[in-house]
Image 1: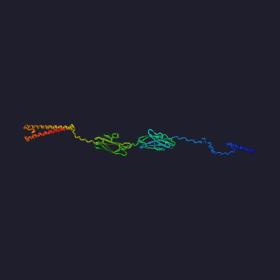
Image 2: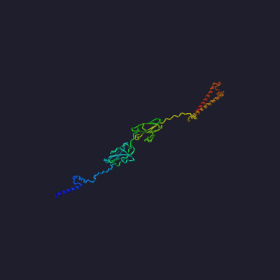
Image 3: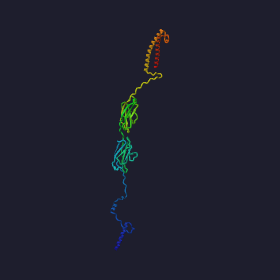
Image 4: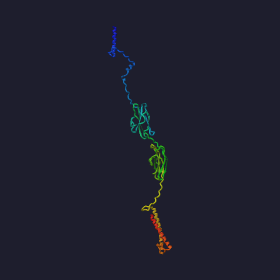
Length: 357
């Protein structure tokens, strides 16, 4: 009876074990699996259910710090230099420097209407050699991180005045009068000069700038100039100005000059014209006065001779027409010749006087 009771107990234990394993069809229970290690059991019991799936990290949207102490240097003609400081350099992956007109400052790093200056490296200096002197620009410096975030830019206005140093004045200015036809100037040009202007001022006052007088010749590089428009007998002051490539003007190098007076021309020879003798009033007065004196003298002599000839004719009965008569004696013939010669002279003097008027 006791052996039967043990077997019944073992069978009941096997049936219970089979039921516990979940396989009611099995008549023989398999050996139970080994228990897990204590550490595994502890981790399995403490892990939350969410550890079975991985979550994405949050997106980086924080921009890096903007640049500080942005400065501009325009001391060198033809270029503009910008310098700045990076507040947190490890967070800055790129630096964009953009340039735009003074009234259109760049607003974002990839703005196509703005010009990019230099590379994209995280640097603290940029040199713009494409800027034109005298033009005002707006510069913007952007900082970017590896995620592409960019900070508000640092901005600065800049204008390079360019070369403002005037060249040296010309030297050895000399003015040589060219007779009454003007003057000739000569001088020595300093280095760096590309144009020269010659300015003439009337009187002793010299021009201190080109607008103070009249330009002589074109504004070009030369070392001499002739002023053919100067008036004879006039005094002028000539100023010579030098210009460099940037348009800077030197001080005036001035020299006064007096143009010699022109020689007085000889009076023109009188020319006969139709209806006029061409004589001047003094000539006419001289001729008339002299003719009057000659006529008075000849008239006196003529009256004396006519009286003599009349007395001779009354005494002898001969006249001028009997001059060649053989009956006239020698001394009487001489007495008739003298009045005849005087008559011819008087007639010639009258003809000469008439033609001289």
